Image (tube, rainbow, N blue to C red; front, top):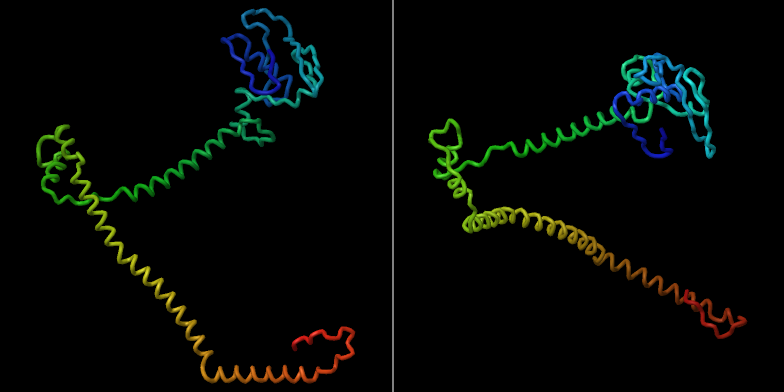
Length: 268
């Protein structure tokens, strides 16, 4: 019975073909939790005892292939203890016994994780259903047409009008035509016109805000352009011009011995 080093190996066969016997061998060769040791029968159809079960076991450690002659009851190689065996006989130890689980075989945690995921998904769906129900569980608009009132009342079991409508009547009442298209377009125009005042109001509000900001800036500029402010600015300009002329007169003739004669004076 070969096992793939990588991937999934599927063992199948008829009842009594030895599948459980191979499982018992693996539980003794490798590492497995069990309440009691189960005997291994070489041939269930032979009532005579044939001695302890034996098997040739080949396994790989790294890149080395090793082989042993195993018999029921002897210790297995230490390397095989790295393999954990989990089957239906060991499941109750993990699911029913009230003892601390030091090791959880790979795949055993799938069911609780899947259950949590299903509960989480169910909660999300419930929230979505409640939200949708609040939107669609509203009364239908009242019908003003007596013709349609009489038609719809015929669907009610306790309706005053006897006789359910035929398929032809339903098709005739549910038929969509060009007149309905025109009515729908007219309703859309009416809805659009109802929303236009709000749009105009919002546009005017934005324009008013922009004009108020511009008015504030103009007022600040006008305050800086009054007669007093202009006079102060003129006086500062005259003082700066006089100081510049005085500096030029004081510097005249001071640089005649400069090693670069003829170089223009820097404006001060």
